[in-house]
Length: 281
Image 1 (tube, helix red, strand yellow):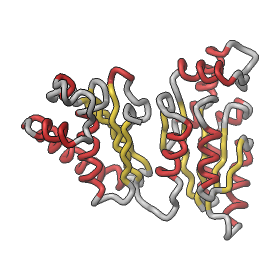
Image 2 (cartoon, rainbow, N blue to C red):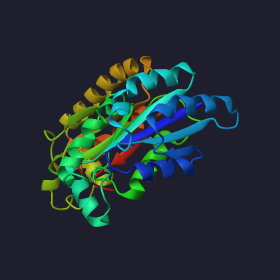
Image 3 (spheres, rainbow, N blue to C red):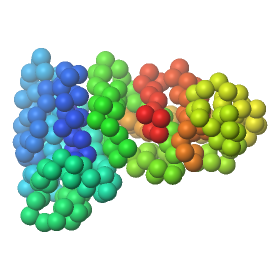
């Protein structure tokens, strides 16, 4: 039985994630009391027809119960359930904007909103520390989050580590959910060629420009060599998810090109390789 625990700060997209998993055939429950998780896992283990379930856990639980989460997680594992934790987050500015736009109340509505967001992170720290996968939804739309959840965890037929290569632009901020971040701003920039400026790293003209430079080829080879060595180590520790972020200034040319290159190279060796271009989405 596969049990996913979906947690995160309010406004980060937990409900959207649960809906996406429900569409994938998961049995989903939102806001189950933490202390009932082992009981729920045991019941699901006994149900031969219900092999995948997802449970939303958030700050509406009692603080003392959230603090006991590490022990509760051990109790879940003792009943034989395969448990993975997904934690969603977003920047404070993004969360403030989302609450303002939707006019919804924060669960901790007895204190100012900015303070409630900070306090909620503190309450959920015990869960966040145990997360197998962290997703930063700051720059992610509703549809992009649904697709990302479905691609990374929705297909139970695929096994092995889910590997995501993501390009981004430093001027828009570094992704908070990346396990590895590589800075490729030292490479020649197609942006300064007027005819290449409106194109992206997926266009043949940009690809040809970049591949004319030895430094680009060397960067590609070095990244492949590094990842070949360390991805194997992560797999040996039964890691379920890994995110590799490649960043350039705007996230349009150099990072996109290298992200595409790495995705294509590692796709032959891994059956769960995904590619995302944050600034092109």
